[in-house]
Image (cartoon, rainbow, N blue to C red; front, side):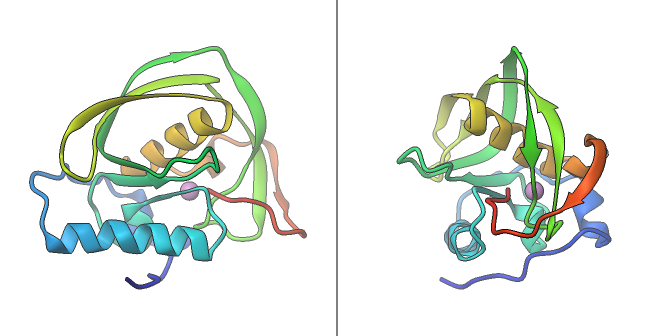
Length: 159
Ligand code: NI
């Protein structure tokens, strides 16, 4: 396992559309492990593969609900209600901004064994799912911020 370098805003790779994962192999397993390690090392609650320079549709999430989610080729099936709150991103260090997201998300994805499952999330988990899935399509939260992007002075959780 290794901590990988997190790409930052301005890096073109963050604007690209990622490719679906078709098979699981040692290299992709290692990528997923490294993504978790990188996310924990940087106090994030989610990380998408393009943030470590890999254009594959893989997301890891841990919003401190006791679960480690791996979402491969995720597909959002349903969203409901809305929430507005601060959002940050490991690829946009030192910043945060208000973003409105659905308060409920139902997503279909493959796990690390390429088994399909359904994940339903509310509140922070719903926000993290939306934020990370956006990364797979080359979208950053900064384009959704209402008002100004703010400087973060204290250590806040970022996605
Ligand atoms: Ni992000």
